[in-house]
Each structure stands twice: as structure tokens, then as C-alpha cells.
Length: 587
Image 1 (cartoon, rainbow, N blue to C red):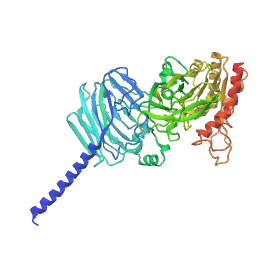
Image 2: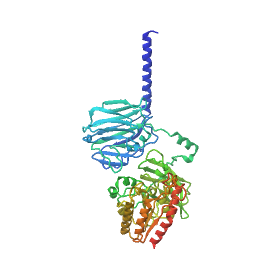
Image 3: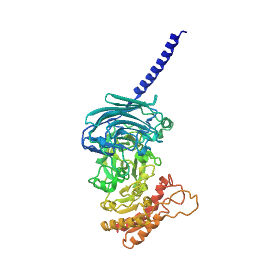
Image 4: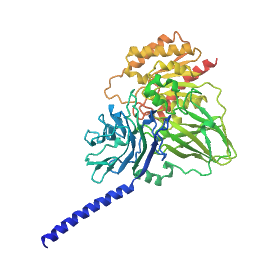
């Protein structure tokens, strides 16, 4: 073989390799689909960054200022692999004066993802940056060289990732920049997604753009979870979604009886604190108050063979110590022979915000049923429709004439870690006494804050139950005593006829490996306050924490938060004191 032939063969082999890589790349690109599309633009007054694909609305810290959105979501598609799958985000931005501070157009990289993931950002000098990082700090960035885009003009951008060769690409108008990155993004990078501003945590607020963002399109390829699919094939009871009859009669839940909300005006649908308290409670409690814990829908129905549900979540989050059903699902009870009996659940899917599911079949169309549907514990909903057989008669239940039990507390009050919404101890007690319940439990934030004097007293309650002690370890014993004194005294001044119940925090279900007795200083501090208050307030009650979860260590999911067994025991331990308080209040 002569030299030219060898050279030709070598070049041909090289060309074949290039062609093969291009084909793989084309296949990867072709496999992409539109996952989400956010039009945004200049429509004022929006509280949600809506996805036209109806999969991924952004609802956390959403604001609208001067023509632009900023917002984020605390969950993302868990079946989307941002490292092994190709994806792209494209859209239009227009900024003017944004370069005074670093402004993020979109991304997944934040404190919640251990700063792994990606973002596309305008730096202080107006230069655009596409940044990718893993949780160990290894990163790569693409810069728009020295070109600045903070000029008040519209610019089209596109950022993309191709696992074939680990290629990053940034395109701004006609300018294209590429590089490679060899470190994997951590799986946490898929936990959040945001548009318009860095999603700051704690008490900080997002900073909205002064310009405009519009026509954002996110493309990729969602993956099937083979394990879940195979289990669903093996056992139909594990199916996440059940088919719903197309002829279903749909009724908006707002036309039925809503219980568990302490206000009739000035409050968003299915949430727990009115807008007027937004600044007073702070960003953490405000975000938690969007969860629909304790809210329920009551109605009567006849002429139906089934009950279906169509609900839209505010977020589709993941919690390792709770079931998706408890976090995002619905829980159906039916009253039979005068008692509430569990009937069925609405199982949520792990992706997307819109959920459609069958709650229960097998109803006799010749009978009339009184029903109650509990809403999700650790997510909020923006809408809920209930579905019935065509021709069914559906009516709002008669509102209860009883004043509600009002609970203010911690994550346990919030509902963590009940497997489904109806198993929160507050809801168990509501059914035991057949009385409405208002759940003001705020995970990690039950601190007896002074603002809750006004919040609680605005609700005409049968009993106030204060269960905050578990969150108050951040305070000194003196502060715990003083907060207990202030909240209880001031609440009693505003509602002198309403009994108040103070509950100690539960005993943790950890094995005492050291053998050294554990002294709970928080209990001592609150009991000190109670001993003072009981001389002033005749209708004050106190429940000790030692018996709340039982004497074994079998009633929690993590040593702290009750399982269903723990929730049941908690309710049983609290019930006699609530009954006594209700009895004395009626007298």
C-alpha cells in the first residue's frame, strides 16, 4: 500500500468518526422534547410563572415588577437526568441597568442543591455567563468574552448541554461559545428550578429584573423509572395514576363546603394565613402557610358510582421522611353510621403539578353519602375539582355550627410524618369530636411569635391548642418562659372565654446509648410559665410530653416525627384534655 492510500485510509477513518459523532449528536438533539414553556412577557399582576405544557409552574417567591417575573420552584422533574441527557433552555431577555448586581436568568444551582447544577447569568459588567458546577466546587464557565448585553435591547439566548463529549454551549444572538466539562453535576441539581433571580433563602427576598424575560423554552427527555413501572405491572394496587372516565361530572370544590381555613376574606384559596399578615410572619412561615395542611372539602353526593379528583399543586416536592401521598395527595373519608370512615386516596404522580386520579369506586348510586376530602399536608393547591358519575347530585355539606379547634405548632402539628393527610393527629381529633379544625402548624417555625396573638385571636375558636415547644430549643429557658407567658396572657385577654391548652414536646424515640438520663430543659421552662399562668387563667390546661408517643421507640419515622402509629398515639394522649376543655367551654 503506497503512502497516499494510507493517508486516504487514515483520513477516511477520521471522517467516519466525525460523521458518527455528528449522527449521535443529531439523535440526541432529535430525542429532545419541550418539557416546559414559560411565555412570561409583560402581562402585569401575575403570581405564577405559568408553563403552557401544564407540567411545571413556578410558584415560590414569584413577583412581578416593571415588566418582568422572578420566581422559583422547590421541586423539579425527578426523572430528568441533567448529566446523562441532552437539554437546552432558550428565550429572550432585555435588560437595562441590571449589571449593578449579578442577575440570574434561569438555573438549578443554589444553596438547596449544594451549589451543584447550572445557571445562566448576567455578571456585574454586563457579560453573560453559562456556569456548570458539581457539589465539590469543580466548575466550568462560558463567558460572552467582553461583549456586554445590558443595553436595553432584546437578545435571544440559548444554553445547552450534550452528554456526547460533555459539551456546553452558550449562544447570544449571533455569538456562539462552546467548551467541555468533565465533572458530573450532583443529583441534587435537579431538585429546584428558577427563572428571573437567584432564589435567596431564609428572610432574604428575590430581586426582580427591571427589564423583561419572555418565551423561555426548556427541552430535554424525561426518563421512565423502570423500577416503579415494573412494580406497577406486578401489582396494580401500586399504580400511581388510575384512569378517569371521560364522561365524569366535574364540580369545583369552591362550590362545596371548605373547612380548616380561619378566615373568609383576604385569604387565598386553600391557604392558611391572610395576606395582611405576610410581612408580620416573615418569608418562612408565609411560604409554609401556602401549604393546605388541615384544609378539607365536605359535601353530600347521591347517584354516583365513584369519586375522582383533578387538583393542581403549587409544587411537587420530595420529602425523604414522608410519603408522596402525605405531601401532595388527597385523602377521602365517608361518614357511615354517624362516624367518619376512611375510604380512599388520591395518589399523586412524582412529576408535574396537575394531578388527575380516582379516589374511590364502588359507591351505590341509590344511596346518599356525606364525604370529606383532606388536602395535601406539605404542598398547596391552586385548584381542585371533584368528579362524579353523570347525573349525580352533589351538594355542599351543611357548615358545622361548632367552633373549630385551633392548633398552633410545629412540623408535627403541620402533619409530619403522617402517611396521608387524614392521619395528622389534628385531623384525627377533628373526626373524633366531629368538629372543624384549623391547622396552624409551621414546620420548624412554631416559636410562639407575638404576631400569633392577633392571628389566633381573630379565629373564633372552641379551644386553642399551643404545641410549639419542640421548635424552641433555639431559645434560652428564660426566653421560653417569657414567650409562653406573653402568648398565653395576651391571647386570653383577647378571648377570655376560650380554653387554652399548652402541650410539651414529645420525648424523642432515640435509643439512649450513653445511659445518661436526658433532661429536657424546655419542658422545665414552659412548666414554670404554666405554674404562674394557671393562677391567673381558670380555663388553662397542660399536657405533659412523656406519654405523647408511647413508652417504646416504635412510633416515629426518624426518632422525632411521628409515623401513623405515632400520630394515633399523639391524638389519644391529647384527646382527654381536649374533651375536658370543650366540655367546660360549653358550660
